[in-house]
Image (cartoon, rainbow, N blue to C red; front, side, top):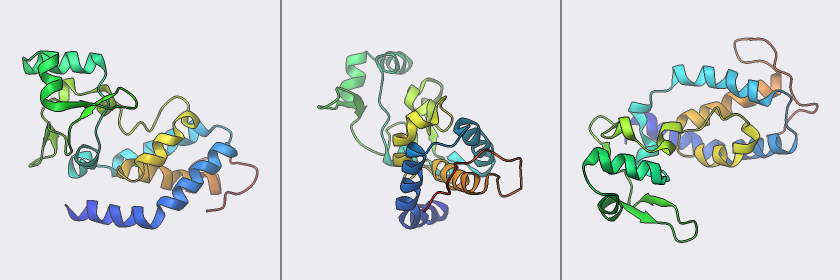
Length: 185
């Protein structure tokens, strides 16, 4: 595990409960223009994030494969959909979702953290970490989960805390309307 990933995991242990409480408080007392606040925070997150140095999502999580994903990847690999499922996937009993049999992902190259099927990767991977969905409030449960696995998600929540508490980011960018009462962490 590289040093920055190790440092990230330490930060998660320290902050995950307070970050989850913060996200829960947003669900209960949603700031005006929450989605604009998320967009502002996200613009700050990506210049600080290098997914290829991390790849923790590919190392510790599994995407959900849609029927379209399975079809597209099987064609790319030159095998049938059944062969693809048999070799790489398992069906979740409760949901019926198709998931990787194991982690890290079979398509992750551990030498450079690149995906060997990047051009045809699952939609779940292409959208990860799902920072800028149209309505943030509908994806709070996803962010609560992802802060433990994804430094970008963690940084997004970290920046949102500053924005919501102060109404502006650390650089003093224009105010974003905050909640009526301050959030307690």
